[in-house]
Amino acid sequence: MAEEDRQRRLQDHRADGGLTTDPTTVPAQDATDACAPIGVFDSGIGGLSVLRALRAELPHEDFVYLADSGHAPYGERGDAYVTARSQAIAGFLHARHGIKALVVACNTATAAAIHLLRERLPGLPIVGVEPAIKPAVAASRTGRVGVIATRGTLGSAKFQQLLRSQEPQARFTLQPCDGLALAIERSAHPGSAENATEIRALCARYISAMGPFGMQAEAMDTLVLGCTHYVFAQAPLRQLLPAGVALIDTGAPVARHTRRLLGTALNPQAGDGATLWLSTGEAAELRHAAKHLLGLADAPAAHVAPS
Image 1: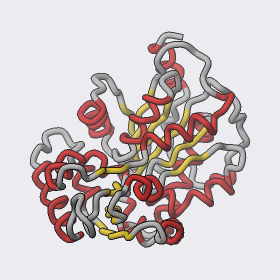
Image 2: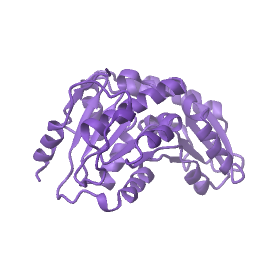
Image 3: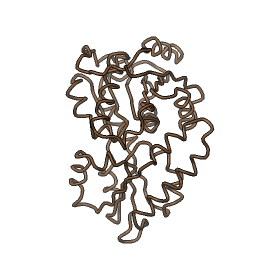
């Protein structure tokens, strides 16, 4: 099937209405349909970093990407709010687009809601993201690891459990980065070049607050990017950090895990897959982000509104 035909197939299944707010009412669907798309969502454009890795690992798959930009950022919201949004979006993607798997491309949403999503959609393979603590510990030579993330992620029980499991192997410095995800989100706005200055200033403030980085003893030689948005701040971060400090994100491991989870349900069609772009915010901003951050010249996006 040609890429244009696959894009048309995704468009034909697009709903123009609101989000389903109660996933318990979603009828069961056959998650084994190999030609069905994979759903991916984030509070905004941060999940594009995960989608990029998914498209590279699974080039024949079709995707439906939903940016909940109208309600971003999640990292500075409460768990109840994030859980409600996650349930609404998962129900929408499952019911309206017949997805065969769901990738929750947001650390905050994973921590707050993934256990509930799995309970309410038991037949759907669901993959979450979490700060790459384990790979960072394996990569560190000094035994000192820095973690930057949102307050919602760092304060979650899921993250604290993960941290405790690795604390015997390394020492961690945790840094909440208020405003950084939002600044990166704003960089998706057309004509928003001034946001680069804000992003660099925020990165400088938080890196400075964490303590010494480097390859010497007692210095952090590894930095975990604990929010999918932060992948798009790698350039200023590398300018601020000493040479040799490793930046660790979750995109590639999540993509590989998604492939393993799909098993025999991989799309058998030849050719590159298509992506349907949806946003609860301004569709033009998602289109601009896909072009600016992923290099996609043609990424028509549509607006969807919660009911």
